Image: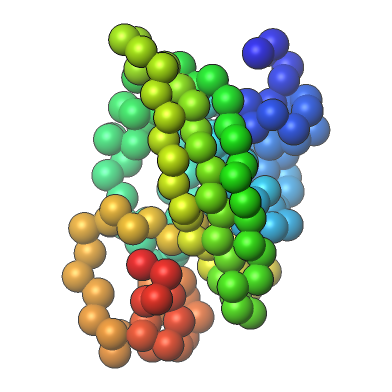
Length: 155
């Protein structure tokens, strides 16, 4: 991959994911957000990874571990298997394969990720955070709904 090519595979970094990383643009779909998050891992844009995680989960992220994983691997390519942009009014799902080299051998991280749209912006719902969430508490996405009526089914 050339220095100018976007890690997500959709063209030139300066016109693809970089404007999102710099806060000059906002992802228009869950797939675009997922692609920009992959590029953020490849470019070590850890703040972007944090900012694009569901609002109520950001404080529970292990930022040091995210940074370590980002920097420890050589990111090879992204393959979007499928994107379902309308699971319901505010939720989407993207299945992808992130190809990377861990210094010893090539690896593939295959994941089905869920996203939520809140106040016009897409956020990643992180299933790995170590949070105790009850069904009756306000949802982690900031919607104001109870967790059980919003994002619970996607985590």
